Image (cartoon, rainbow, N blue to C red; front, top):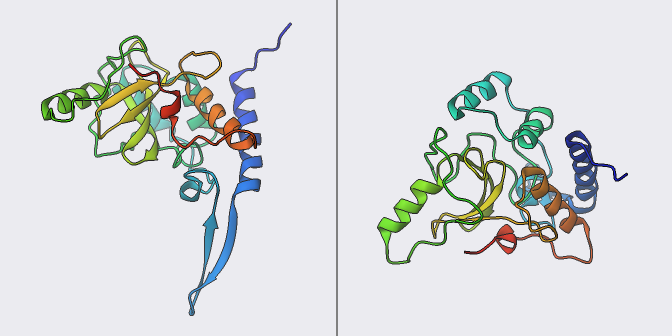
Length: 222
């Protein structure tokens, strides 16, 4: 019988692999500034010089309860397990994980509304010359989701919290007001939080594969 990994098994595996990646990737050097010395960091992996493989504190239980009350339900189970047992922000794909409720682009997320898109009906880019369509798209994208990670250049990964796509990670271009589901390259199934983290790690650790510079390569384009 094939062994099905539990959520705890998967998190433990991620932590082991992240430790391996940190040991191989994070290089430090002491830089003299005359009257003082500072530590410089150099990494091959995209975004790692920002988070430096460091974890933030775990989610505060009272703040988490209050957030889920605003949301009208629980967070995706794998993401909740991560922020309560490992870290709410810090080391992770791209420039690192945003803490819960820390939204990019000064976004005002409507947590009480459902994310309206699905894999079958995503949100393609707004027309370049249509400000009204851009605003309409952004208003719909910023519902029932939270910013998970910053890729740079106005591109982000979102975690859907409410609606039919709840639990899935989506790619979001703020500049183009687009949101597209991320699909696993092998199964073609939508990525969950742990799927997303594991895929990034696997590519980063495989010398025969290019690292993930943007999850746009896994986006299901409309």
